[in-house]
Amino acid sequence: MFKVYRFTILIIMLFGIQFAVYAQQQVAVSDPISNVVDEIVKEWKELFAIKRATVVEMKGDEVYINLADKHGVTVGMEFDVIRPGEDITDPETGEILGPSETPIGEIKISRVRERMSIGKILSQEKGRTISIGDVAYSKAVKLKVAVTELSMTDGQRNALGVAVAEKLMTKLVGRIGRFEILERSQIDKTLEELNLNLSDLFDPESVKRVGKILGTDTLVVGTMAEVETTVDLNIRLIQVGTGIVIAMASKKLLTTGEIQEKLGQKLTRQRQVAGKVVEIGKEETSLPSKSVDNLVFTLKECKYSGGPATCSFTVTNKSQTDSVKIKIYGNFASLGDLKSRLYDDLGNEYRAESITFGDKSSRSSVTKELPPRTVINLILKFEGVSPEAKLAKSIVVLVRIGRSRKRIKLLFQDVPLTRPLQIEYSIYPCFSDVRQEKICHFDKNTINYHLDINKKM
Image 1 (cartoon, rainbow, N blue to C red):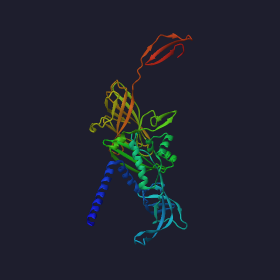
Image 2 (cartoon, helix red, strand yellow):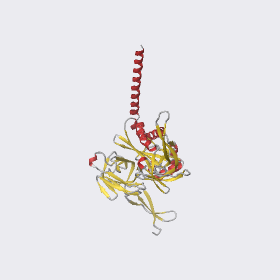
Image 3 (cartoon, rainbow, N blue to C red):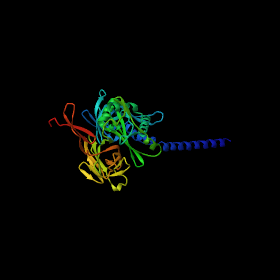
Image 4 (tube, helix red, strand yellow):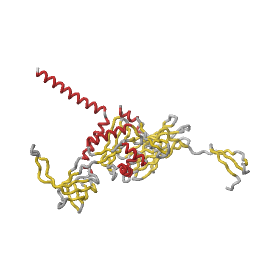
């Protein structure tokens, strides 16, 4: 009887274990956002672990240690310097726990190099001097971090960007533990006060302004790009004081089920302006702009001139230090349907038949390297546009940025097709007004003008 009982218990336990594994697998499958965020936090966790370095050189009040950028060392990071002594053994287990430590001093990193870092001495214990061979441990300080929602590369906001940000906030605190998270409402309020959009947070100067008001040490920003069957996430952890990117992550989400649904849930952020509620981002500028990292694509106008429609843009590299390579695609045959296009308000579709990007022109594609803090002109020409078309309902500009092989679609919507002013004059009889001055009226299109022929020209 006892054997049967034990066997029954064993079966129940095995079934319970299998069910738990199955349940975990189902959760993993059904919550792709959590999976992606888990991967990001796991990668970043190593950067915030306590770091051990050795003092390898001394030059005056500067200390050289054998940790560098690739180990997660950043400017401003502080280290406790100790001198190791004899090993300490756990009396219960006999395990060696590590060496005894004699505190020597503190240093603060001022420069980070490829294979080492240099710090300034902050303090030294009385009668002790930091020397070659001493050991430095990074301080486990609490960091304030602001996590912004992710936006699409064209600046559009949706529920997916919010969901990723919320998961990231929760898991940064739970898995790493060294972060003090600021509420997203504080971030929104600050962006509103500074008249900034989410895309502006890729500019180091904007990061510093936002961080100063929020009183935060680090800022998490990111973008999303829909590429074929996936959504590509690009997320950065930025040190506010310097604008330096501490960590980056690039992940993919399949655009199925919940992801597709959240992508379709568009969001707007509103505020009160001059007695009326307006959508932030729409009133910021009269010219539509799309941002990708430090690049800003601004549509100036689209002109229709009896057949072709010519759309003029400016492309701005807002980076203070880095050049970036940009490729613009026109009627590129080998890419199939992946071309820059225009869709008018009559339902017609047109391909970009020519591209002029700076001093280069082509029908297929043009590549330029844009220096930092530089603006360049881009012109796309669409042939055979209907004379009845009044509006470009959608303009899709296909681009590739940097060394990535990913192509990004920039979407501009509801763009008027302006036409050259055609003047036709009709003269009406002149008459005398109440002052007995002779006035002749002309009709210029729908605008009425008058000419006082008594006045000297």
